[in-house]
Length: 125
Image (tube, rainbow, N blue to C red; front, side, top):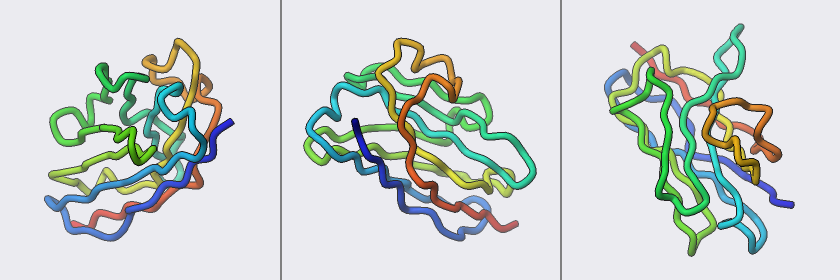
C-alpha cells in the first residue's frame, strides 16, 4: 500500500507557472506507475498526465501537451507536475494517483488504486 500527499497548488496569473508535488510513502515507489488528474467545478475528473514505473514513458492529455511535464524522483519518492503557460481553464483541484495496473497509460481513473487528497490550482485571467 502507498499513501500520497500532493501539494504545490495556489493562485497564479494566466501565463504563469506552478510545480505540483506528490510525495509517496513506503519503499515501493518504483513499483507504481503514477498519474495526475484534475477536477474543475461542475465537471468530472479528467486525466492530465501519467508516467511509467521506470519514468521512461509518459502520456499527456491533449489539452496540456507541450505545457505540462510529468516527472518522478526516486530518491525522494516524489512525483512532479511542472505546469507552464497556465490558462484559466486549467483551474481545478489536481490529484495525484498511483497504480500497479498495466492499464496505467490509458488515462482512466479506475485504473488507479491510490489517490492524494488534492491540491487547488487557480489561474486568473
